[in-house]
Each structure stands twice: as C-alpha cells, then as structure tokens.
Length: 161
Length: 103
Image 1 (cartoon, rainbow over the protein chains, first blue to last red):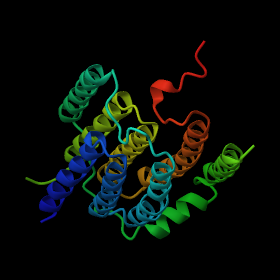
Image 2 (cartoon, rainbow over the protein chains, first blue to last red):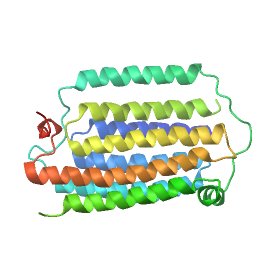
Image 3 (cartoon, rainbow over the protein chains, first blue to last red):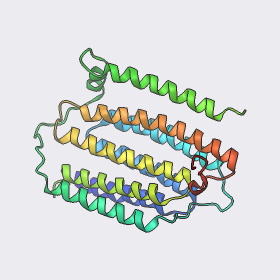
Image 4 (tube, each protein chain N blue to C red):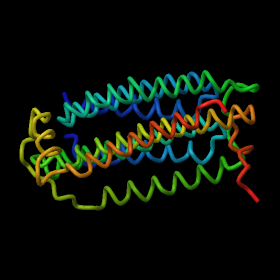
C-alpha cells in the first residue's frame, strides 16, 4: 500500500517539476510549482514527518508560492513566457551527468539503515530538540536574526526612491 | 518491492537535477527562482529520508530541514525584491540583460 502511494507521489512530483521547467507560460509554471510543494508535503507524511508536512504546507504552499505568483504578476514580460536560453544543451548535459553520478552513488553505497520504528508524533520531540540547552537553540536565534535581516533587506530594496 | 531509503534518495536526485537544469537553462529570473526552490525541496526530501531510515529516534535530519526552509523563505523574499527592483529599472526579467555589474 505505501509503495503504491510512493510511486504515485514520485510520478506526480517529477511530472510537476518537469512542468515547471518545460512550460513556457510562467504563471502555469508557478501553479505546477504549488502542486509540487503539496506533493512533497504528502511525501513527508509517508516518511513519518508530520510536523514537517504541516510546515511545508504553511510556508511553501501558503507563503512562498504566493510571493512567487505576485512576482509573476508584477513582472509581466512583453514576450510572455520563459524561453530557454543559449545554454540549453550544455545545461542538459551537465544535469544528466550529475544525475547519473548521484544515482550510481546512491545505488552502489551500502547504507547502514536502522530497523527501529520511526518516532511519532514528532512535534514534541522536535520542539524539545530545538529549544533545549544542549540542542539547537543557538541556530534558532541565528535564524531569527537572519529572518529580520531578510525582512529589512526586502523592505529597503522595494521602497520607492 | 518494499520502498526504502534508495527510492527516496533517487527521487531527490531526479528533482535536484531537474531544478539544476532549469537554473542553468532558463532566462526568466522568476523561473530561475522557482527552480532554486525545487532544488532546496529535493535536498529536504533527502534529509528527511536519512532521518527516517538511518537515525529514526534522533530527528536531526528533520530539524535541519526546518532550518533549510527558514533560509529558503528568506532567500525567496530577498530574491523577489531584487528581481522586482531590477524590473522597475530595466522593464525586463531576462537574466541575459542583467549585465549591470559586468565590466
């Protein structure tokens, strides 16, 4: 049962990602990006990462895709769309070579997987890990500073002179 | 066939390479930003898969994925602000025309 769900999601994510790259209409590409984000959220659920799935829906589907769609609306081109540039063939070669290398490495490596059952629900454990003394409290505070800097930077850049 | 770590890693590699192709080949700056988001999501899938199959009780991969999402959100906000500012000045989002720092 879970393998059927995985294969469906794999086809959906790869198809949506290809649509983002191939479609010439930028708005349709943005919509298929939303579909990709949703499919990845379901993929997190199949990996028992329930908190991360909710975060994915809130931040990617809720915030980042709205930002991208607003950017598409604000930057309407005369020639509408995104034709591939001059580097199309070299880019294709580089991507296929990298894909071949990565797939070969993944398949030929003997991963030491643990047979333990996954921890669930994960929300309380992630919260404890993030905010406890020996945990990730310093990165959390640094990321708060990073977000503040990003907000200020975006406001300064967008302000009319 | 049972779905395991390899399946998720190969899926993540495929998504990463699609995003890489888009970043290298596209000319529209907004589409390039979308492809960067695809690449970051592919990396997140790999990290959550490692977290699930290698250290199921530690959750470090999921916590790292949360930090990646934070950085991706900041990057999207600043990136779109830069693109819209350049669009205001040059009436274009074609990266071939973004040569104002070229000497």
